Length: 432
Image (cartoon, rainbow, N blue to C red; front, side, top):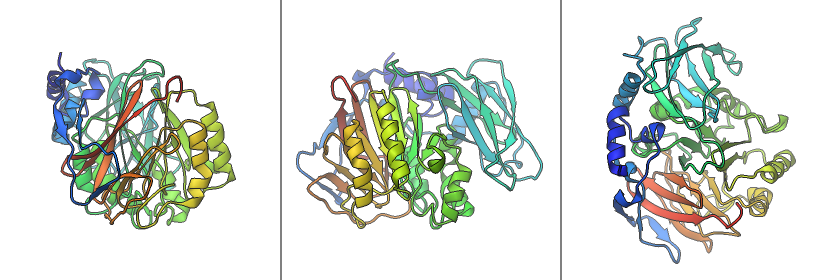
């Protein structure tokens, strides 16, 4: 079946372009449309930047109503209508999804209640009812979590917490299966344009979300997180897990304590870096989140061990302050000196950062492509170009990355849904 027909049939079943990847992985590049790459006036490009590309992603042009998507997914899982609203304050969102488990986090608006979660698979009448538990990270007791264990790799699941709509997600495939991966990444997202970024992001299919830091302007307090991140991105993080790195604004409030409270992240950063730096695998991609507010010997030693142990063909690192930048702040020398030699030595192909409120992609530097994606909604600033720059732009945006066995394609997308930059990175033969 052509990809266009597959996307339409799955949209009819689940109501979301992103849900295409939840239920079935079918692609036919021959049926995909051709997309022209625009050059807005605020974009400056270095030499040898192509001005057009062939898109293999027919689903990214679809736009849907997220509430329709949730209702249809609930129907597919036999949940029926949503439970009565009013008991849930912060809507449920996915955390720490792996091939065999996941965590759902939410907050309650009524003291002392303990909502349950129903878990099912599309088209399967069997349901599991799971209890929620107080999240030890939150002393108030309002934040609760549900641990979803015993999941199967590369399978679709849907869930419903009492008092909230149903949502769905897909677990990662096992490494070595050759399954592709789509993810989005963005940074510096708090502010009046966050909803526009979220709306544009809702029109593309993706399996997970990365954030390059400065999530909660201005000072990283709990109200900042609620208003600047959880409110505008609620529909997206209900169906795709968010794996963030922290930024300098997230650190303003109590040494990033709120960041570590609201997110349940992989805890493999050793005691010194617990939920500050970490790594995880998704299929054939190894992801590494770093903390540029704590560039120290502990983190450098951990990163060297982590990268040395990695055997997957693709590695993506993400962090807040950029090693290279032509923006207002410029590149961070401590970050460049601490991390870039390890990126180069261990074959990291892509490094994503924020901090600068712009977009900038470097040419490949010692085998590494660096991308600044700091136009996530707070503000945009002018950006120049340097001898390492392939393209730079000043506009609100996010990046969409598609990974296959031997190549990775990154597309930068603005709030109008237009692709304004695209690059394909080929994997080095025989290695990462």
